Image 1 (spheres, rainbow over the protein chains, first blue to last red):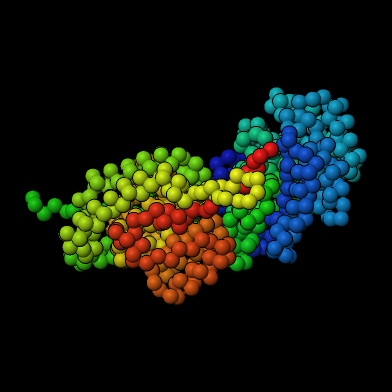
Image 2: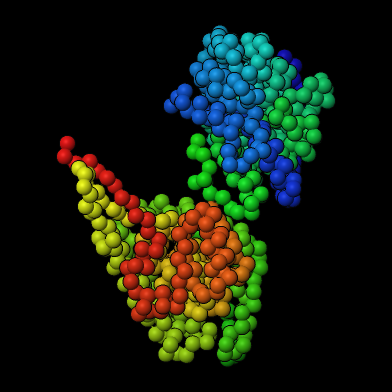
Length: 295
Length: 287
């Protein structure tokens, strides 16, 4: 596979992030941004101790964000491990919330391609609307880009009608140049979404890598006319951060991407923080986590 | 060369164990009673208050789970340090208009008050807990627990004793606090902060803000993370405002008057009870 060698200006990226983060958002825009951010959340539980009841509870939360505050949107999707797909599907059957499942030996990706493809097929068959795969970072870092591209396109095939999100795990890619290259490979290989991280490795999503990925998406759109989505995941737990990501998104990719179809937050505790801010914006009273659901 | 320029102290607030100016960078002018010099005092903003509440909330589990004996040691340590700095505190109280004798008395009383409450740390539980008689096969007992984050609006009239007499019983009971200092008598804030800072009081357990009561009272009484509010004063409008706001999350509200901070009348373990919750347990027996 031939790649355009786009080099990233690291200092430029840092400066631009710093500049965009210093934007002051006025009250009305803030309210809108908060609601929009809520509707973009992939409510996530990816723990070894996940149980069907935990998943059911999360699904309830997805559609009933804060009962005492009517008029709120539902989140975009629930993100779970593959064995929980059917539980989640059942719990969400009357809603428009999608079910996303992580697959391909998440989070390490350390297994054979055949096993990964079986896993993906099974997840798609179980009814997952979206599949979150991880790339083989070891192969990527050793320069075997062809393998990574091949892997992604095979997984894409196996997904069938399910949307494919490709996790780059930027925390392991070391440089912004690598992030850019991995983004280009993933999009060329058919990713519907590119996603920063699994949430299991630190650092997870940072504004810098997210900006680089946004620029990659923009270049890809200009060249090929296909809109690829973006999902920063991990480490975004405060509404202030979420708003800063939205500012970056609006300034880089424009209005079209300000939609849950093209932008998601992978997060578990972000929802409650945004809810606290929404209630604060509407009542003027600072909130406490004690009065929001435990999840 | 006897006309040396004095090095004047920058008055700061105490938030999360740090000496901080207001994030708003606002100050208000405060004029000394004797020399008519003007001093700048930080004017806390809503965000300063919110940051303090967060600090107090984060510090709560650590502070409340310390042993009573350890809390006693730390509060006694505050008294030790204050004793060593008493000359400075006397000077500050005099600058605020007290005569020398009254100032010395107030500092002495403040130190003694800290020693008094330090002593109560491992004793008040025995006084207020109980084993309750019930007509069923249960061992029924009531124990005390700290309320949580306490907002304190300090008395206007006293810049030292008034505040310490509110903070000491709150801390002894395992609570953390955010205090709005007297805007008329704010000069002891820095010295008190320095005392707390060097007495092993963990960061965030006590937060001291200076600013305007009229501006901050709404925030103090509405914030959902605040579990109790201790108000010193007799302003009917303020009291109504506080009680209405506190109803939002049913904060425990204590309205206190002069006798709740003056030395003789305030010394009481019942002051600790202001910020305690009682928990009653029914434990089955006879099986």
